[in-house]
Length: 263
Image (cartoon, rainbow, N blue to C red; front, side, top):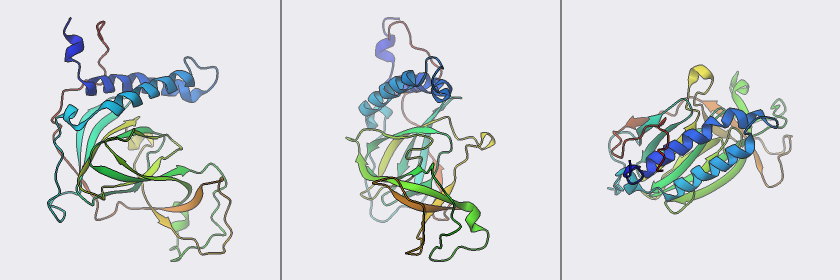
């Protein structure tokens, strides 16, 4: 129909591009010899990132919330579910002033985060592909019996403050896969895309971590230049963090919708 292009919301276009992009993931991960291959995935990921750079709170009918002093009653973080398919999930996280999503991972997943209003401080860690033996490393305070099995050696990759003028933050199965997100300057919201979605039965469950402090002078395997090696201990979900739900007020999104000839 002639009006289809006008009627297609930006968030629907983002969902359609996410579907196109992450349908290519199995081929991209197969390496050379697959078709269309890693190049096609990266090109589509770049197109998705470009669309995300344009999205604003008003595109989703969101009104920035104002801080009202001490943290309000209710969950520190809420989630607005937009859509989910086999390839990806998409929604909005809303953080109260001072709220924090603890350090967590995204096993085997890609993701993009775009701030819609406010600002978030995000601290990212890469998975370490090198030697991870912790037998000779001691920590302060000492680990309890059995905790060494929950250790993970990682690399501190970045720490930055993002706002609505910032480009999307990208994570891959290895790079920036673990991160901590905080709203230090007031209420904040960000659009979140994960591909594929969390699925405990498929081995994609969320794990929480805390950073440990090795005893100075103890030997540890070297980190790549300009990156700090850190030890993370898997812990239960922190008691002061929980995530509630809110209805999504924006345009309807159909994740499997194909583009019309006019779009």
